[in-house]
Image (tube, rainbow, N blue to C red):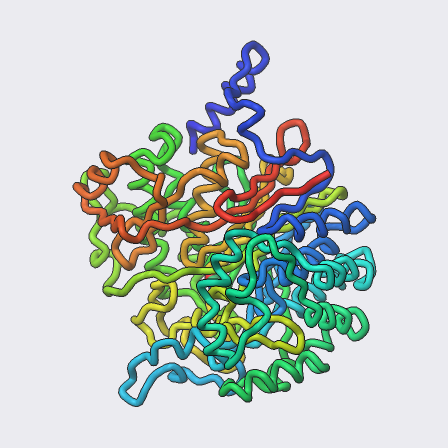
Length: 564
Ligand code: GLY
């Protein structure tokens, strides 16, 4: 935004005379001079930091943090799921790694439909048939092999100790274990390690997962894709009616991708490319918002919410129609992200009245369900920065637990469009571009993002939240860039979300006053106050003007920043 650049310029001049920054010390998150990890759990952030203190870099810390999250954050941290990495090296090199799950080779377009062509409820979300071929282990080994400094043994050994010694259950975790206990029993036919027997404050060890980690040290990723762990996965999946074979596992590979890169004001945004929709949607959103002087409207003011909401409607309509696995379909990326196209998309926007969703595209759908994914950001002492988002899809994925090795398998097949025009778990409608095919990757919303300012690393950010991920990442970036918030303030600030369909603005409890809600409704924006819930758990790292790093850890979860 032009006024932001002007403001920064004026502020730089005025700083020599007055102090323009009204933020106090308490407004900032954890500050560190050299390196930092911000993740969903303190234990995972600490392990990543310890690895860097031993001389490891961000990629060593990634392997350790990702595996530690599988131990201490089993609802989303995983070895049975997949994810995306976006990175920026100290020398400015950028890249992305796609370790998204794939459909098993026997998967078919109509596999979740009955004989009348209707979606069979639960078939793509619960149990063995919902599972995609996991990518996490291939991803962390591929990233580590190319860029890591320490040996796999040095990196994984502290995680084994964590799994063997256990971690303390938090209140939030206990509530989750309780609420999923009965479905764990139904899917697995027995009690599993996690459930209502675990209480807040108890120490929970996972020795079976420790055994899997030992095999990863001795045999590498092959232990998972062709060795003992792989055989256990196939046995567990097939004996519960699933279709993943050992060949599916053996053929899985993570893929290096070019990240999506674009400019916004004086920032360069680097985010995840397809099969995630995150980067392209962020580019569309920011491209549609940029011509408006957002900072003039105040944070979460009526006008700011209208501009962002209308950009979101148009972006999600495009997402649902055009995006899918680039190895299977052609995506008109250039056209979708050109300035002229984005300007045209916003031509019918007016501050007077909401654009009706049917004027953007057609459809009417059901509601949201819960979402579970996890994000972590890392900066290392060498100046490398990572943004990593990883997921089982729903909380605890398919709920199918590989007991021999102590981990859950994903339910990522639901991120495909089971039936074009029908909503998935997140209420997202899909089209042919995201239909099911053997070995295809399902479309994601994960948006691990790194931002440069004036050619230097500035921010690493991301969040869980299913379809709300993209809009939470957007608002966090805008909070810092447009509204001069600290990283911690930006992460903690209340958020809202619109995804075109269903036609509503979804808000967090504290987002808007009654007067604001009335004004939005009067302009034609439905808001359902019965569906209020948290939107994401954003974790981010910001490089401050003095060169130190500020970690912003989302207070909505158990998230923690650790640095040195
Ligand atoms: N499973 C959530 C996502 O990939 O967006």
